[in-house]
Amino acid sequence: MTKNKIKTYSSKVLSVQESVEENKAIITRCISGSNIKRLNNINWLRHEIAWNEPQVLFWMPKNEQAPYFDYSCTKGLGDAYDYILDPEHQKEITKTTICDVHWLIAHDTHILPGQYRTAPKILEITVNGGRLHTPDPSLIPQLLDNVFYEYKHSTKPDPLRAFDLHYNLIMVHPFDDYNKRTSRMIMNLALLQCGYRPIVFNRKTDKEGYRKALSAMANGDAKSYYRYMYNTMKASQDQIITQLRSSNIK
Image (cartoon, rainbow, N blue to C red; front, side):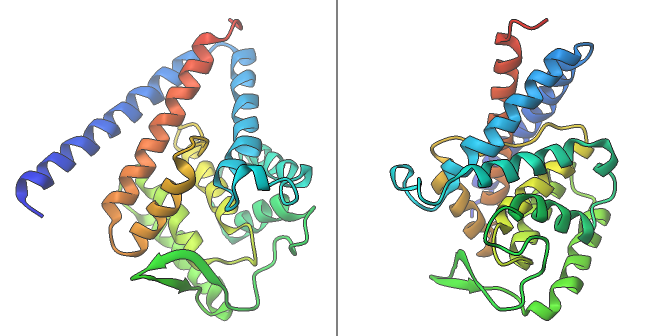
């Protein structure tokens, strides 16, 4: 990669970072002083995360999702969203936290909720043209400790720390299913702890973009992953600002 290309990329990312921080301040001003407006935004985000996002990111085309996408799925995501909003849970993120979140997401499904997997799995992530295998199940507790240690001691900007946490949890793949949903919820908890609003993957382009971003990171292209995550964060903020400004609630 040439120096000119590197400079162009750096400038582009910096611009998105600045927009994210500016949007953060705008959203804070919009919801401060109005508990009703804040609650309205919380409910809107809950709907997007629990209803629209899983349909967008689900592996099957939307017109074929009905047998697999039901009320239990959306209810679990809504319950987990309520969990991360609770100030009592906005403390240090631990293994207990992710087990609690996974339990809420999966407890009305066929998956054993909150329990680590006991068998190897194959990730839906392509590396060098092949599928990626998960770590040995016996290593999960130790690997999670490493993930949380890295998150706690990272000197990166807060959004990047949250993006790393999201990716690293997916790579550990601690549960039999609902790992990505759990990881996205934990990422949003990390963002809430730092004063940001949750990210919502509800654009049509996220179905393919999310998968490609994870594969890019797995193949060593961290810049593409971070760029996608930052752009998604900004898109979510833009939707929140529009929702807040168009609301009749004062």
